[in-house]
Length: 120
Image 1 (tube, one colour):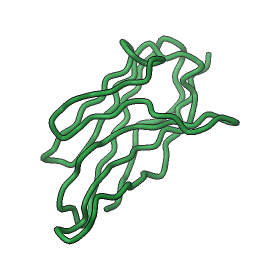
Image 2: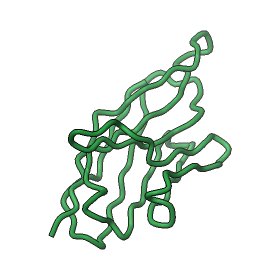
Image 3: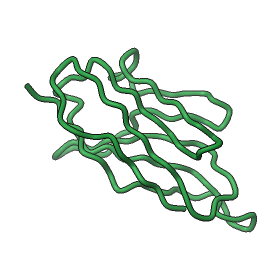
């Protein structure tokens, strides 16, 4: 399973960005899809996650501002980020829990990371 993330960039405070992450390769099933972020000098933290059934979970710091969604037909997860703040600056990583084939166990896969910088 390979993950390709896109959509990061530089935005002013109060602005918006939309991240996308597409899974490709040998995919039997995908369970949870999510986004994590890591700011300089800090640990990687969960931003938002969504199950195959559509249940979502958000970090308290982004509730009401970020929205996670997925397109199961395209094996793609999105993160709509509104009202961005300087403290949202970080490298954002997509993560999926997936099985590559019927015989595989559920495993974690990570994207390459995309930089989000919120600054005036």
